[in-house]
Amino acid sequence: MSNATAITPTRAQDFPEWYQQVVRAADMAENSEVRGCMVIKPWGYGLWENIQRQLDVKFKATGHVNAYFPLLIPLSYLEKEAQHAEGFATECAVVTHHRLEAQKQPDGTTKMIPTGELAEPFVIRPTSETIIGAAFARWVESYRDLPLLINQWCNVMRWEMRPRLFLRTAEFLWQEGHTAHETAEEAIVETRTMHKVYEDFMRDHLAIPVIPGEKTERERFPGAVQTFTVEAMVQDKKAIQAGTSHYLGQNFAKAANIQFLGRDNTRQLAHTTSWGVSTRMIGTVIMAHGDDDGVIIPPRVAPNQIVILPVTPKADTRQEVIDACEALAQTLRTQMFAGEPLRVHVDKRDLQGGAKNWEWIKKGVPMRLEMGPRDITSRSVAVCRRDQGPKAKEFVPKEEFIQSVTERLQEIQDALLARATALRDANMKKLETLEEFKAFFAEDSEGGFAMMHWAGSSDDEDTLSKDLKVTIRCIPHGDQFAEEGKCFLTGKPSSRRVVFARSY
RNA sequence: CGGGCUGUGGCUCAGCCUGGUAGAGCGCUUCGUUCGGGACGAAGAGGUCGUGGGUUCGAAUCCCGCCAGCCCGACCA
Image (cartoon, rainbow, N blue to C red; front, side, top):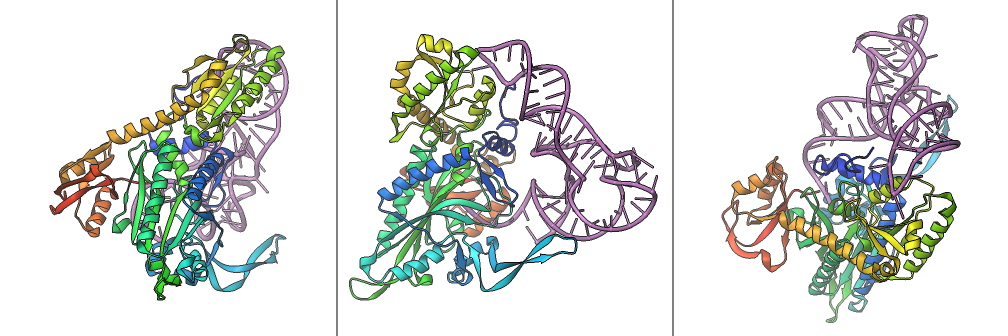
């Protein structure tokens, strides 16, 4: 029995269900017994580790250092910045007690009763601006203490009503950068620098082209002066916000009292920024690159870039084949790809070859190698690329393969980026009128990114959001968006197009 | 937080209307055949049917309470 595709349903049939099935088939994560929280399994976590390590290099290269702050935030801290507090109020988990009392029940069981109520409750961090701000206030006295360039890798919790693996979970992993600066100019440069880091990372490491831009007031981070975003398009033509960086002005410095004595001997408030990406990136990778046979992971971030599948048709040559595979793996591991040693795995499990092969296809390992007795004799390997069909197979002389392996991986990386770029470009349209706009986002139409002239208000945005379920994803940077025109809704003059889309 | 639905072996579900103490497919184990390959056959392991109470000779099945989860909205990295 052979299915046409490994994943049912296909993307075209039911994209959300396809996504769930792909995550499961790739063994990346599962829903846990804790509502809204997921178990990230080794294959999914391995991807996160690579994202984390590679991003961390970029953070260090731009002058940041890592630190760690408490999981629990005093409730009063959240009350310091009104907009911020309001923004997160509906999704906070609150810790109110600090001990349990074992209470024997008549039926012999034990119940644990929370006691020891806290005088001031703690909130499990939904983000750490407030508590890091309090630390910054202690650390900063003089302009000589600035800038502070801190990053934290941690978990946060937002009590989401409708969780989905990786895309929206109650607890998720992320990094949050927090910086404090002497001047607004410096803080804005920092915000833009990190925005660029995210853009580059998405493109060069995850093979996902993004549209960098600024959020409108309505979509802005609560308490921020400016929010920058990188917006990616995934295969159902919806937008997903992949990373944000915020220029916070002096709002949080005021709230947390981050003051310093300036060069002119006056007391001044610092200018702060924050920026982050989360495990949502994994969901973005899956939806951007996956096909009807499962996940496709870009080589640069794949937990294993190459899996070697020993072909062992006869018991008496089995060990010989496995030894040859191990030897090849060792040779490959001495090579570097994008600055890191190749990650090669030999799958020696005693399973049927076909089942094993399909397992790795569904997991999205970029390259599979098959080696059997005949290949040993002919000194060749069978090479299968995940960005090509499941049956596509090229027999390559072993030495030639070893010489060309990193180029081949780069080809896959490039092919994925090219494919994702083509998809995005094919679904980005410049539209002029409200009628065109409505047709573009009609229930039965494909949708995509609509580039529109816009001069409407936040209320206008609200209306469009309610009626058509579309939002302004960003006011994009870049010359191709700069042109004179008239707002499609209000008719007011506009000098730049904005990007509208449905979003995750 | 509003509206709808569902809780049965690891997973997906049937059985419930018309009460008689459990079934299928997938997965798992073993054996055999096959295999440059997501195969086939046979045997087998695994469930106090979410939970508490009620009706009944007898409850997965009927009634009431509770709990949990899912879907559709509002919210969101």
